[in-house]
Image 1: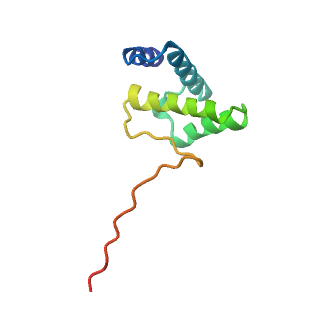
Image 2 (image 1 turned 90 degrees about the vertical axis):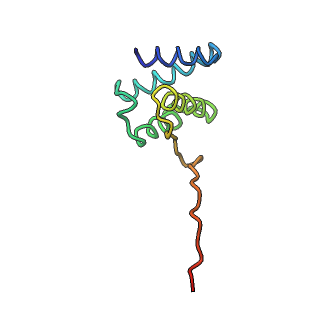
Image 3 (image 1 turned 30 degrees about the horizontal axis):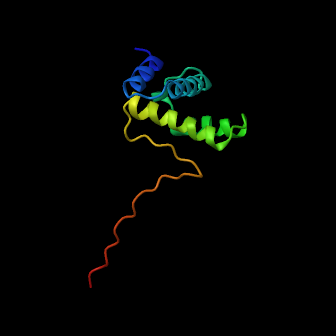
Length: 107
């Protein structure tokens, strides 16, 4: 099954609105075309960040649209491609990891 068809069917089964489905399809298609039709699972984290940076800096998209694109990519990777550990890091929203518990040295 093609990736966009899978995305659409999954979103429809989860009762997403038609507008949301249409917009997510556009973002995913643009993402794939940006990387010359390379499969999303073959892309590195840097290539994903490059796409998001290009939206902001070269296309001049506002933050709200960029966040919408991030949501579409997160849905693609987590729900469609099954990468539950996938996250997008950037300068404005770093991934927070828990601090290790510091044990006091024994005397």
